Image (cartoon, rainbow, N blue to C red; front, side):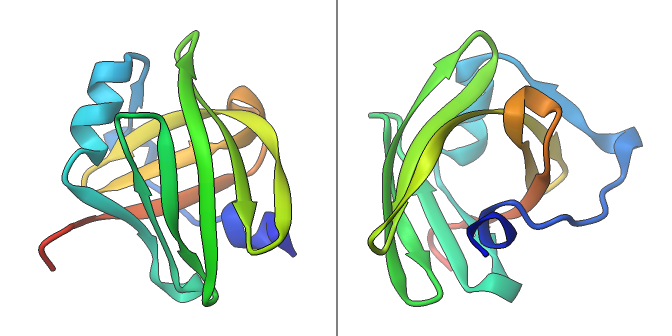
Length: 118
């Protein structure tokens, strides 16, 4: 269930995707945006301080992240459930970011980059 929430498989166009390897490129993408999967009522804010905040299915999401060897590595809690530490490959595809677990070998989730002002 948790895997389905945070790692939903969604089709993406490989031709337009750019793998983000640098922390600075990742921060540029998330700086003024909320990461959103509307279908799952999931909204996350990833802060440059290493903090993650948000909501999914009405429950709070908190966590921390770091950029390690070109991967987004995070620990998160959803409600009272702890999600395992995982390092994820991040690709940018237009107005979306695609996170693929297990350093790019696992399941993927596509988040729409919604400007904070909306």
